Amino acid sequence: MATSATSVRVVLGTPALQLSGGLLTLRIPVLNAGDVALGTFACTDIRLGAAVRTSPPAVPLPLGTVGPRNNVTVLAKFTGATTGSRLLLTLRGSYLVNGVSYGLTLNRYVTVPAESVPTLPTLRARLQATTGNAQWNYTVINEEAATSSQRVASVSLQVAAPVTVTGTPPGWRAETDNATYVLWVSDDFAPPYPTHVAPGQSLSGFQITCPRPASEAGPYSLVAWNHAADDAGLVVAEYTLTPHR
Image (tube, rainbow, N blue to C red; front, side, top):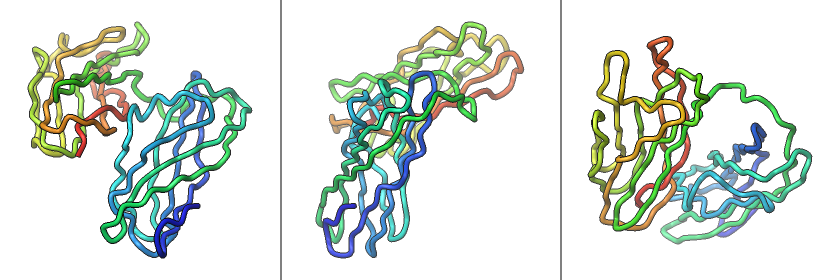
């Protein structure tokens, strides 16, 4: 619990944990148990003992306004955590009350569970980001097994800053409102869909620019097309680097 302003009380709830393939996923509830709204709430650091955080790839992680008696969930992933180990989870954040910025630090111990299989299948793919010169470059990496029929067919980014799409791979098209989202979609609409990203392959050339050079963590999703069924496939939703608001 942290009390940084009158009538403010923030509580770190009990996280839901799942260990699968050596990757520990935590869904961390943060409750505003006070009487005032926490404006511009952001997570500025997440640590779990000596484990290595893989997601979000950067901070801050903006989470919006959290009203009184409401909560927000922070998703984080770590490697290097072993079953049965008891680790200290530390979440640091910042928020505004009446125009004044405050910081907070929340702690609790968690115990790493046994390995388990995810209840809902997700696409084994990721979006790799590199930045520099006010440019954000993205590469889609399909990590599905070679026998998988899941091919990545669209990339969606959520942004909170003025952006311009300055790179789109051949055979793809881009849609954006230049302020809140960017969507890249393969222009293939009939088999054999040659521009879809197959298992074991990657595709670069996705690029946006922004006059603000700093980065924050922002949500993205990759959607696959199931070539065997010729129908919509699996989805993965994660965080990547996006321009800072």
